[in-house]
Length: 480
Image 1 (spheres, rainbow, N blue to C red):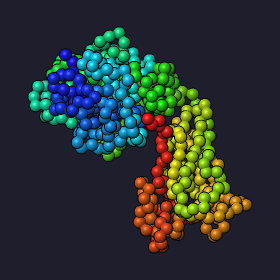
Image 2: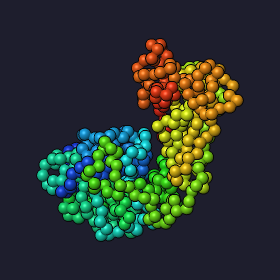
Image 3: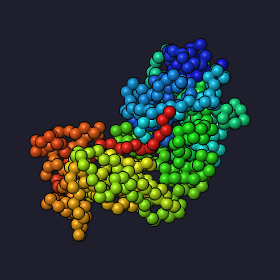
Image 4: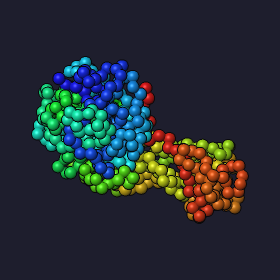
């Protein structure tokens, strides 16, 4: 008999229903090794299951881990579920509509759920799904690595060690049917995943050294390590996920599996077993070059042209009566036949801001005190080519002075009141502690003791180094 491998699986070995109550967990990966440092960072933790970060926006786990009555979880990065290094809030989750919890005791190849994060994760490399021609590597006898968040006790106390991320090397055992949509068996007796590892990944290392993910553990024979477990194969459900979410989770392929790499088809983990990387340093380590697994890399042809970029809102020479005012800055960027836009940034009065956007729609938001401002959008493509927009001038709570006859740059442009554009908007000549925090609150007091705070900080040069109040959204997501 097979049993679902979440901590909400019933000890009587029946699958969890949508309204069932959680029960005590059963043991986990048999004789697994505890992760150390930043090992397997894309294996995420949740209350009773495991999950995988497969793109900056999307996490995949098992269908039986997320009943229709459950709210979206906060996924946890780290090594111990009760002491995470980072929480990843979730926007929404969708369970595979083809999943039947009553079929084969809930253990089947349709047992998959995807979740969309509130904000994308770019500081840790995601693990891409094996897709397109790459699925040929998913074969019987192939070495695989499984990861989960529980104890490694064969038949002891069910609670011992639960919530600790562990891993082990194993192999692909075979297929239950003729199609990968039926799932695939991974592991063997005393060499397999167990309860609580539900939703956890099975990884394969490619010949080029990069690591990719193919499976979502659904369930297997009791007790812990009792035999090979059935994994849902992620590639079979990519078209549904991409259509349902509107997100591209295959940066090396089109949805139909055609090889069509983008600039995101690179930078994958080369050594998730390296224990010397640290979470505090964004798990920095060796990452892969542009992939050539199914064809030429995205940069196989030269790209020497910079992206075209423009500010579409606000219009240049526009005026906002109220000060301070929240200003939305919308940007369009297009790399034509090049490698594609890697990032968009914003310069205010010649000062480039540290925040950047990776995906359209490109939009920034900031609160501006009274003054005149020059805005420039900057687009960088995957080849390192830089494009800049035409300057857009905006007046906040003041008149817009005429353009100077000859301007040597944003920092030297005259505002008509004896100051440079770079100085306008600082509120005071020198700001100390009157900056804008990341949550949009003004911190400290203006240097002159007045009531109108300062939306900038001084870098000692008289030019404001602006702190944006927040991004307008990395991606416009459909909400249901």
